[in-house]
Amino acid sequence: MNLPSRVQLIDVGPRDGLQNEKQPVPAAVKIELVHRLQAAGLCEIEVTSFVSPKWVPQMADNAEVMAGITRLPNVRYSVLTPNLQGFQASVTSKPDEIVVFGAASEAFSQKNINCSIAESIERFAPVVEAALAAGIAVRGAMSCTVGCPYEGDIAPERVAYLAGLMKSIGVQRVDVADTIGVGTPLKVQEAIEATLQHFEVAHVSGHFHDTYGQALSNTLAALQMGVWNFQSSVAGLGGCPYAKGATGNVATEDVVYMLHGMGIETGIDLDALIDAGAFISDFLGRPSGSRVARAVISKRNNS
Ligand code: HMG
Ligand code: MG
Image (cartoon, rainbow, N blue to C red; front, side, top):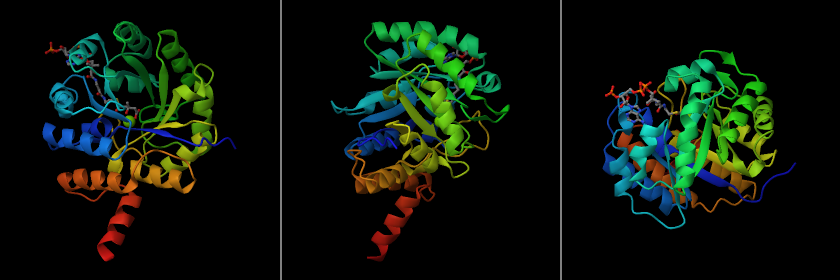
């Protein structure tokens, strides 16, 4: 076992968490959520995406949200940009990092960004070049690294292929995403192993949806390989509109509780994080998707 002593979490709640919400979430609520996350100690927050508002209406207020955030100097604010148009629209918002997002599955690539894997890389290349020239960091999200809602199981070779393409265009770090949460620990380890053919472990992060309740086990499996970057959503929010049936990301509260229990530092104040999750869950009018948050809130109410 090669467990890290410290883990860096990216909370993707404001973006992945809210993009799939049917009810409009006002920009002011998204901004407040970001403020609460950074107050809880999150050093990386995925805020929004500069995608087509016809495809994802919930993210149409991207520039307004970015402009409304009171930034902290030690926090990295990232945004998704699928093409040059999205990148150019994001520049005035001064993201610290942009995220190009591809898939290990051809069918998902088509459904999510309306092009093949090869075409997506052609689109991303000028985005990556422009971002790096402007001093903006570049991350690459790799969807469907273990399973696809349209193609079923995805072989690790497909992940290695995509990771190699991401590397070849200058992407600096990548997310190994289980978009529909079907992965189990050994399969996730294979996807990470495939990614490690092209990226060093410090530049690989885990992004596990929790649809089948495997996300914490998958996080532990990745930790055992030395991975120390993970994405999660406060209150377990999340889902992709183009991956039907997929539920939220692993809840940040649950990951933090597990890590702290293992003696691994995150720099996050769990109580403040639970309050951030309660804020957004109350707004959405449903209980938190975090088991830890529900347990702590119930304990608070009973004491
Ligand atoms: P397209 O229709 O092929 O684009 O969509 P197009 O270039 O042909 O342009 C068509 C129209 O879209 C034009 O407008 C463009 O201006 C506009 P019109 O002339 O019809 O009025 N357009 C844009 N508008 C705003 N921002 C842009 C943009 N680009 C074109 N950037 C496109 C291609 C990529 C735009 C579309 O498929 C899209 O927006 N997809 C985004 C889907 C998405 O956001 N999915 C969720 C995020 S990924 C995810 O959740 C997975 C992740 O969490 C990891 C995991 O869990 O797997 C990251
Ligand atoms: Mg996701």
